[in-house]
Amino acid sequence: MSSLENKTLFITGASRGIGKYIGLKAAKDGANIVIVAKTTEPHPDLPGTIYTAAEEMEEAGGKALPIATDIRFEEQVQSAIDEAVDQFGGIDILVNNASAINLSQTPNIPMKRFDLLFSVNARGTFVCSKLCYPYLKKAEDPHILMMSPPLTMKARWFENHLAYTMSKYGMSMCVLGMAEEFKPVGIAVNALWPKTAIATAAVRNILGGDRSIQHSRKPEIVADAAYSIFNRPSRECTGNFFIDEQVLCEQGITELEQYAVTPGASLLEDFFLEDHHKSSCFNQENKKLNKKS
Image 1: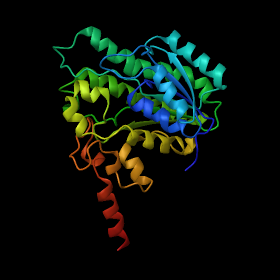
Image 2 (image 1 turned 30 degrees about the vertical axis):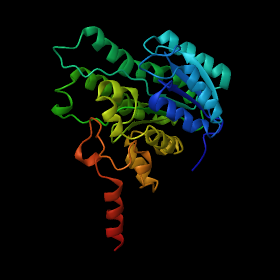
Image 3 (image 1 turned 180 degrees about the vertical axis):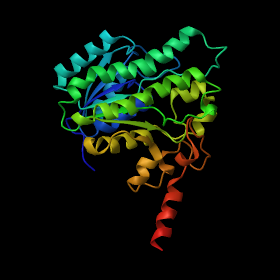
């Protein structure tokens, strides 16, 4: 495995959850982490701020730059990029992790919430990628990673939360288009999505409380998968819709119980996964053994 030492990661939504753990994983290598998020003061239901995340990343061995930013606003994103480049000299990796969630059905969702979903998920991803592009194309091995699902045009993923699905698929459509558009300059553009529910504030507050957390995996599994992707040559690894477990299986990491919040508990599957995404490490290992025999 290579290293992210001295690489600069621009991570949206990095004050907590998956974004923070991706930053912590890179920080252990001595990477520079630009923490782009809105939370500057403690929130009663959402632990962590950009400043507490920065402290953790510096304790882990990296350099951290917390920048209060609302990615809905182009000028704030550009200002954050300018500050990051002034501080670290460039940007090597963009992680479009910031995301809004609302699972309301069509008659029930206020248009204000609909607009928020699209402003953060689809538009925010697009604007961060667009504005980071001039710096990424100068990097030695540049990556853009969207925390978004594989594109699956099945009605069951739209019928219950149409607005949310459309906004998340907007992120994934950016992968589909930008991977090809940016290929000539060597920028890798990929998506990463968890196979199971991940123990984050969204799962606790929206998807079932502490009981759901007990049937989830830790954010470290997504961070480890992201780390693996960042260490792949950008010109050879683009346009993929990765599933966290499958990325680790490809590395030979098949013992995944270490990531369970509650070892031995059944795991909740995440949204948007079709049957071909659900093969387990155990099944993959058995297929390898059968081929050898």
